[in-house]
Image (cartoon, rainbow, N blue to C red; front, side):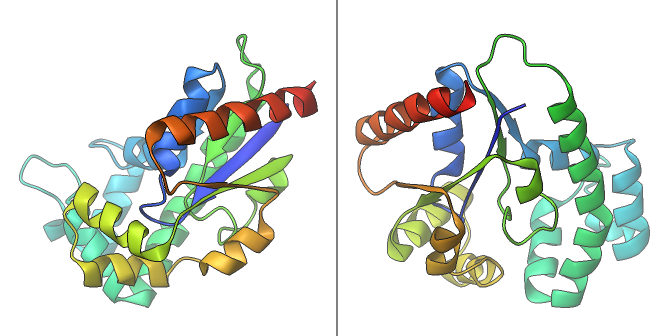
Length: 200
C-alpha cells in the first residue's frame, strides 16, 4: 500500500489540497473527520471527554462543544496532553484499519494529519510526506476568515505546531499555496504525476 502523509499548519490549505488530490482519483482519509466520528454522540470517546473534562463541554443536544474544548486545550497545555492521550491512539488505530483495506481503483492513498510530524507513529505509515505551506501572515488571515478565530487564538494554535522551517525540513515534498486556486491545482496535478510514477 503506497501512502502519502499530508500536513501543514493551520490555514495553509491542507483541506483544499486534499480535495484536489481526491478529484484526481486519490483515496483521501482525513484524521479530523475520523476525530469527528469518534466524538459523535454515543461514541466512547465523547463519553471519555465528558468524564475527564466535565459535562459542560457537551452542547445541549449532546454533541461536543468543539469551540469550548478548543479554547480550553489551547490555553492549557496539560489539558491538551490529556485530550491527545484520549484521542490519538483511537485515531491512529482507525487510520491503520483504513490503510489495511485494499484500494478500490485508487492509485494510492493519502492520509491528512494536521500534526503528522508531531504525533508519534504516523510517518512510519507513509512512503512519502507532503507539506502544504504558505507565508505566516496568509496563514493567520485564512484561519481567521475560515473559522472565526481571533488572531491571538490562531497564533496560540500555531504555537502548538512545528515551526514552518522545521516542518518543511522534515517533508519529502512541499506545495506552496500562496496564489489562486488554478495555480494550486496545477501544482497538485504535477505532483500527482510524480506520485503515480512512484506508486507504480
